[in-house]
Length: 364
View 1 (cartoon, rainbow, N blue to C red):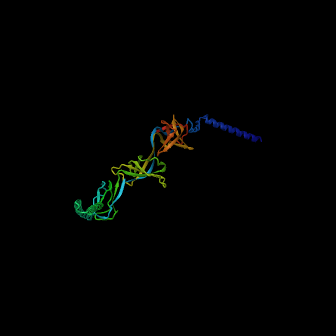
View 2: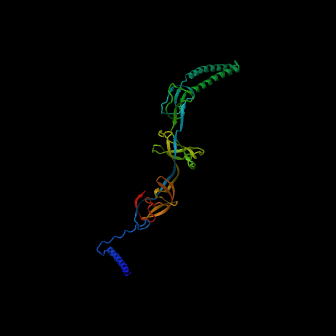
View 3: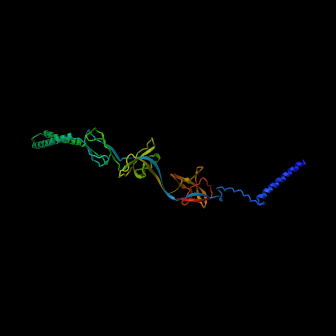
């Protein structure tokens, strides 16, 4: 028993000596290098003495913003028609050039009217005869040489010839096919010598100055567009921006699509805008003269609240904002920011309120 006690005491003394030797060695008592202290624990992001984070910022300033929607539309001709003849007949002359601009009333196609011209000449001769007979009987009637009935019959025959001449003139005029309005001709569909049936198309005619723009807007925006409202549009494959003025709208909402059909007009003096083209239409809803826009990446959504980080004297401070219209890269701030505030736009998911930050780049 005594030997066992002595052994335990020896072990305890040896352990104490070993610990003392380690401590003396670490303190440099034996000429060795002092062991380095363990590195300090990194400061938390919220501590004032932590490592600074480089961030990008923007300075808040008032800007102009236009709220708008984009819809699809198409261009249409102001006037468009397929030229055709009212009566059948053989084409004697084609007097137009394909793709040419023509004025209203220009003669395009002449149908054969030889037979009608011959009938008209015969009626002209008959008119001279009936007029002379009627005048002779009028003189005789004035001297009571003939009865009133005889004179009235002669007068009626003369008037009938005049009516037949007028009818022939109308039939002759229908053999001349003319342009109903100013416009540009398309490709001809007939040739000289062809026999036309009534209503057979000859050539297309379109009026493209001004050009019309047709599009539809959702029901909730039906009250925004009135006659005289301005819209803008771009054509597919073109960067040019055109302006158009609303000239008409349907009197009711389409119950199937819940949209309102609208027509606008745009000047097209050089004919660059062709009918039937796809158009991306921008409809302005409201203009904001003084509003605040910041990059969308600056917004930190948190439990249904929109927050931003502000740069204040080298530290990040959190603020709550109310947002409005969202654009492609920016978002409108309705409340929570003032002109001159500095908003942090990078690293907003890593920093915490009170974190030390340094400006890496100042945006516009």
